[in-house]
Image 1 (cartoon, helix red, strand yellow):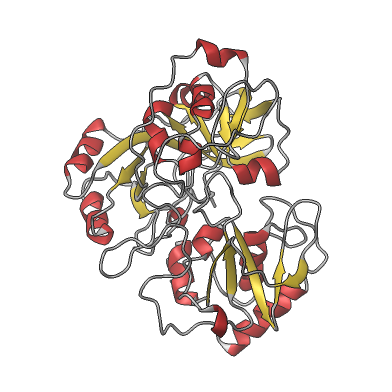
Image 2 (cartoon, helix red, strand yellow; image 1 turned 180 degrees about the horizontal axis):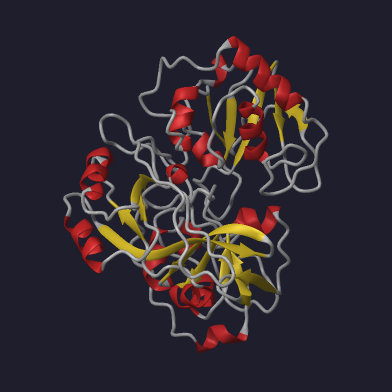
Length: 420
């Protein structure tokens, strides 16, 4: 099965590009209107302009950038055309993906639909980076950056480096997978290439962990223009998705990237909980016991970024594996898992509820960590590299994004399980 591109895109799988294979296929596609609130109108990053504080410095850095966006300095960046001034940030509301290139007429028709304010063609595939299949976008950096999370969007240096042939990785992949800075990344597409690390800055679309220029995407063998990112901040997205599906060729699919309630109004950036899902059944007592028993059986096992068990885990991998032992299908990414049931107030938390956190400084509105509430003020989590699955006091500080009670039926829809 392919890696989901991200929030709402758990219903899709990306094209996988293997060495010598320039014509891969999408594994599955489906509809569904449950969407994740991980990307607000300003990408979670404010109202524009430069942040006052300098970025974290990687070797040779000479320019100022937004807080916590790591940017490398390498010689090729100076030969790329200067990055134009950043335009108005746009919410990434919907995403279209197909196994092969989409006709320019499809993008043009999408742009003409009522409520669509922008529709940008790009490339989408899973690429092997340093031995791990990584959901990757190929983009025109100058055009695409307005769809990124605010701090990342405002980092002109990062996008200049992407334009010069580098690969930008998400903060979570770079930090949690301990990607060494100041060296090239081994990327296996149509051929093996060594790409300079442009920097670390999360796009803010769940599951997307790397961005390259469209020129690099061609070199790697990624399909050209097989995806479209769509901004439609005031549209009823369920209606818009139905209209878009009529324009798409066979094998293509559209999925949402933000949460939206029955009124058609998008949920707040980075919020947890499925809008309109109050009163859902939740886990049965039998499922709850199996879930918690499975999770607690993993205590002491190591954190490994991207791992989903049975003996190594990252935060969302632990949740997905533990619920699978109870027969519950869950999406893979924490931002998607935040949409698998209704919000629960802290005063009403019960064992088995999921706690969500904003821990990514390059995308402050993006849900990037999940833990399992055990009751009595305790939570179980796979914390970070170098630590093991542990039980710690539940945290409700500034990084806390909310809690949900898992509904298996909603979880199956978000995960893209046809049985759901």
